[in-house]
Length: 163
Image 1 (cartoon, rainbow, N blue to C red):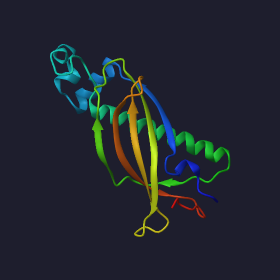
Image 2 (cartoon, rainbow, N blue to C red):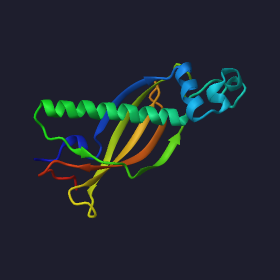
Image 3 (cartoon, rainbow, N blue to C red):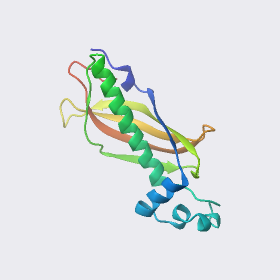
């Protein structure tokens, strides 16, 4: 089998969009990031943000939710088409997580992942590291959040990883 183009460097996968409501911002923040500008609309107006805004961890969590949903769709489609499906393993981590702009109630973000490359793991024969850039953009196309991520991936037999 030749290299799957969806894992070639530069391959971009749109993961979907998410609208941040005041209710979802407050609910997430109450559980995981209870700072005043995430949980209290009145206090948020007096903060540096000037209004209720989503936790950066909320924006990152939505990326993961949409990434998993997109992966399930990709897997189902590959199976229906009779194509081999890679096996995903755990992530060894992420780097360079950055939040560039606040996300306010009513904002809709579009999420994506971009393949930076793959490399075989000598320590785990048959497995590779899939390196990604992950991002969220607002309706104006402005970058709101990004980070570099990695995941273990085991390609089907006879699969060649990119150079």
